[in-house]
Image (cartoon, rainbow, N blue to C red; front, side):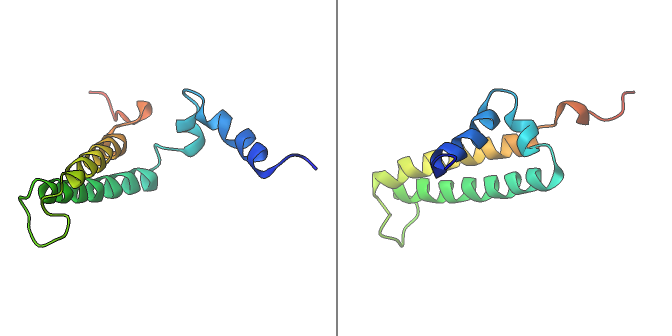
Length: 100
């Protein structure tokens, strides 16, 4: 046998995770990937904001209302959403457009 499932998976993904390689391997600059990052980022930001509001007892009507746990969970989800938005909206090096 050539190794376990995990060792073969690690052999595939470890080079991808090296600094500077992941972007080219995953083609993060392609238009569909950027659109997906933006959409998922907006959804995560909105859901995070909703959970923050419920955790702070600003939005009622749920068992999550007034539970501080949802404030912290919502803050983490909102931060992840902002990071995804930044990654999706950031221009790649070669996409600066025409110089004038």
